[in-house]
Image 1 (spheres, helix red, strand yellow):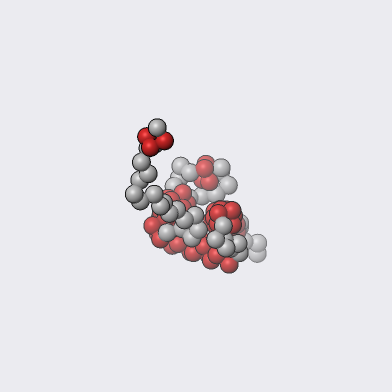
Image 2 (cartoon, rainbow, N blue to C red):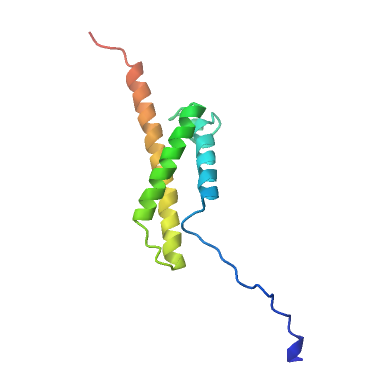
Length: 121
């Protein structure tokens, strides 16, 4: 009865890479970040702290933010082949994107507040 075991698939090798993300994934992150920054119905704009960003500005900002976050994560990479290190690097990447997006929105909000203040003569 030992021979009745299920046959093994011929190609049982499966490859999954956590870090670095593929270009397709990076592009998807850029698109989603751009949508979030430019949406008037995102959690960021609903907080009344930040205004949505015009679509063209959001798109270019998203590309810059993602690129900087990728570089920062890659430099701090502890992904020496083990899965835990790659997961940690991916976590750094996600945190860097969030941090940089918020910094950009805070900078825009501060600039808008400064422009709204009446000049003192």
